[in-house]
Image (cartoon, rainbow, N blue to C red):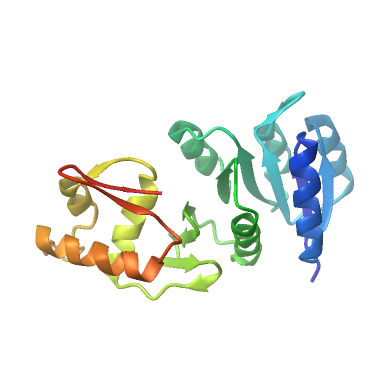
Amino acid sequence: MKYNILFVEDNQIIATGLVYALEQEGYAVTHCQSVIEALTAIAIHKFDLAILDMQLPDGTGAQVQEAIKHTGTAVIFLTVVDDEGNIVRAFESGAADYVTKPFRLRELLARVKRVLHMPDNGNVLLTLGDVLIDTGAGKAYLRDTLLDLTALEYRLLLTFAANRGQLLTRTQILEGIWDSSGSFVEDNTLTVYIKRLRKKLGDAVQIETVRGLGYRAD
């Protein structure tokens, strides 16, 4: 099956490189540089995925998303705006992913592939580094490979993903991974599980220890 992708980006340098990379992966790409061009393309073609720049010369990527909301087209936002409020609103609006510029090409291609192959079940997808988390299925993927995580490791990863780039105290993390059965996770146990999670993630996610304060992941 050949997937059709709508790519809306007004930066010609970014667009040229990404269109080439997507086509090399076997995707059919329609590139538009403005909202009006995108709306015209949507009226003519059916797309499986839309990669939308947030800031466009004549409007925003959100306007394009609104136009394809009921077509079953998945959306990945591509933007320089790394603001928690915007990210939350994007996911609440139904976006499958939110990628900030500058981005690593291989990472973006992996996210495109994952979104296109995810079942249309309304699940929320979170990303952290090169890891994608399907919260509805309770699964995490590292560069397209399913991660073998324990329940507590998964909750720890989810806590970091939901607070990407933010400093979390050990208390905040412990509250986030509180065992569903009510069993308390001890502070010493947290150190062990962070070490295990780091080992499984390798260089895909940077989990930084902020001495005397807590941890930050990105």
